[in-house]
Image 1 (spheres, rainbow, N blue to C red):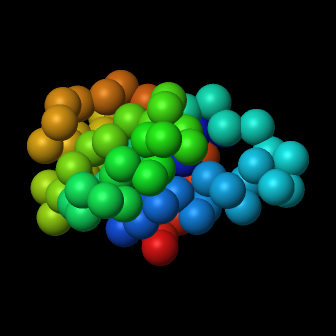
Image 2: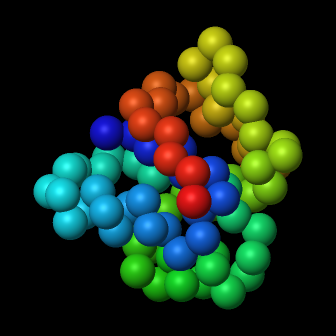
Image 3: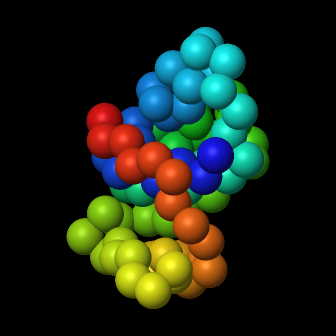
Length: 80
């Protein structure tokens, strides 16, 4: 499953998916607070931090972010 988490915080959505036994293949997180990003990355180092939610868009199978563009499908959008 590919997840886009907006206002990710400390990756609460990822924790819930893990506890539910749902496999996450790729996890994109939009968060701007350094302490939250550090906590999320400490627990889930494979998280792809994409920056400010105001600079995120998705069209034609491409996730556009301030940290780059990613050709990907999105299976789940979560908001913290």
